[in-house]
Length: 155
Image 1 (cartoon, one colour):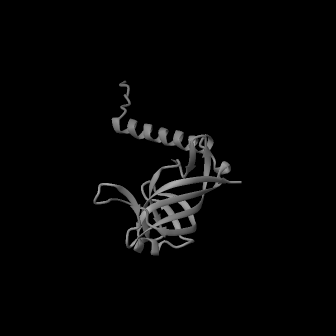
Image 2 (tube, rainbow, N blue to C red; image 1 turned 135 degrees about the vertical axis):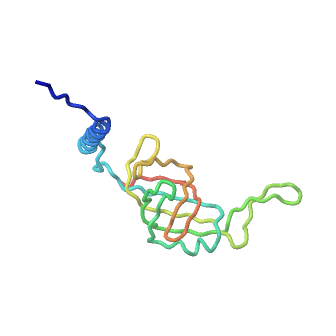
């Protein structure tokens, strides 16, 4: 009698490895991934020294705010303060001065988001944010390149 040999196809091995990896990934997420029980309310302050007035006019308190690069939810806009722009220019004599620029303003925005305090910043949506970080912020229908100037944990 001839013995029947079992052949294992290369494709079958790949499918088996993918299934095993999926099971391990699911188990890791279920048992070892960090939970959101440590989530805290974080107050973020954003500042820009020069932004077009037509953008300022479209930023409304209560709008959702997102980091456009990381697609991270940065909370709801709580307050908006608008002042004259702080534009740097060089005079005819070669001196640097800060002055107001027509049709531009400076703007300070604050939002409340859910995050975790870290030793060196705050984690929001899996991304670490620091003081001095610049983000491409979507505030409602507006898009602003803006700096994080204050991070506070709300107790």
